[in-house]
Length: 401
Ligand code: ATP
Ligand code: MG
Image 1 (cartoon, protein in one colour):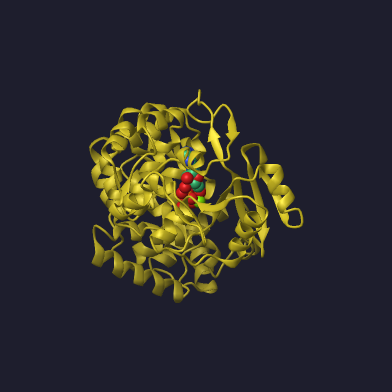
Image 2 (image 1 turned 135 degrees about the vertical axis):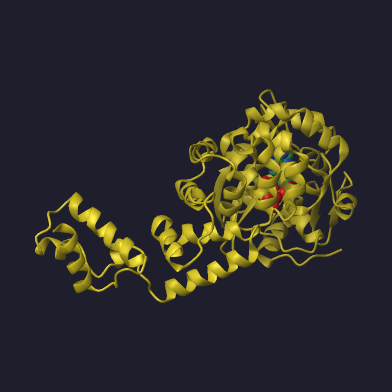
């Protein structure tokens, strides 16, 4: 069986073989090639020790990403490739990192340290597939199974529990029963995993095509991984069905849906507990700002929503409404586009009047002007006033008098 592999990757494999070492593609890329998908990156594994790799690639651009763990990044035709020496991980005392890593000359030993059978397959053009743990059969049966004893593997590194859930959500694979039982039983150990890793896995899990199943079957595990996100009591199921009805690639929308049963304070706390970046957090908070209010009923209410939470916020709020009120929300989304295309006024900066003009007409700088501009904006949004300098000024003077 041969696969189409980029020539820049093939060149690196050939170099290592030509120098007398073994070298294979491994992990996610082989899994994806066997599934008929195009891999996003190509990791390699080799019998060459780190210093031997450096010698083989001495005339290439390299980055010493993790030489202690045996990884060298080699740039080939501008593309970076991670190449790692065959490795056996030592004992794990902290459920996160092996105490030591030892290099080995054996590919099967390297494959044995990998997390799931479908990730423990190696392939080299001309040499074929190396698959000591039945990964190909599991791929065909769409099963995610730990390599070796799942309890031992999850105890070694608790992150693997979340990786199992994430792969299941993204690939739609069923988690094999012993692997699943170990995930449930050892979920407490997720407290040992760093917040960044938990956030990264949960974000990918939430955006999986098969997220619903995993979110429902493993809610106990997820509560241990990120209590602030998943402790939603009786609202959990409906929040999950809303989240999975939203577009798959939109993490902030799916997060908003999941957090929709919570108060604004708790949404903020949940996002900062997982150290989501400011931009994602703000986007979620804005989308949820008016989530529990009825959808706008007319252009004026739509413009008011726009003025309060901005274009992205309003669009997100309406899209959150799509699963439960598809027709209504779709109509509002197209009205929103139309209002924006018409250049309708919804921000103070859109008004045909500003602080300078008001000051020139005797208004005091500061709060008076700020409050007046907000009032004028509201009158324009409601259609009581035209967005016209003279009319706005006349109204302002009348209010003052
Ligand atoms: P993707 O890149 O699509 O998320 P992947 O399988 O390539 O999936 P990576 O995190 O890139 O995942 O890891 C590459 C490979 O390294 C995996 O396929 C697996 O063989 C191994 N691996 C990664 N993390 C672990 C881990 N925590 N425990 C054991 N093996 C792991
Ligand atoms: Mg990968």
